[in-house]
Length: 89
Image (cartoon, rainbow, N blue to C red; front, side, top):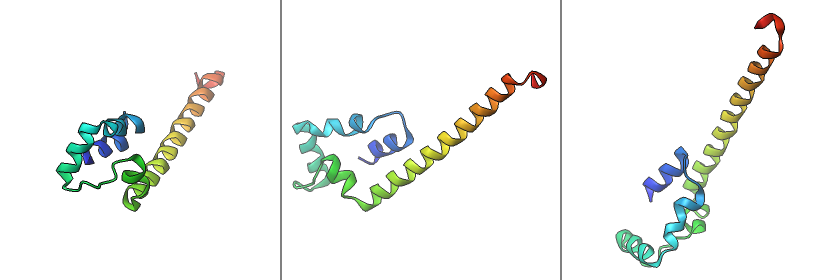
């Protein structure tokens, strides 16, 4: 599960790609056995939204995504300005 969350937070996979396999009864049973908790809530809500630690990581990841996107947009604007200005080519 930790590996799955790492992959999700580091990018490259959607929320559904990470959690969809847990809908499979066999995998759900295996994970519950591994955790030694037959009543473990293995839903997206139970694993993420009901977990303060994970929600804090989600908020951090979202804030970092917004910051990264802002930097990309600023670079794009500078690049476009350079190509529009005859004296800067």
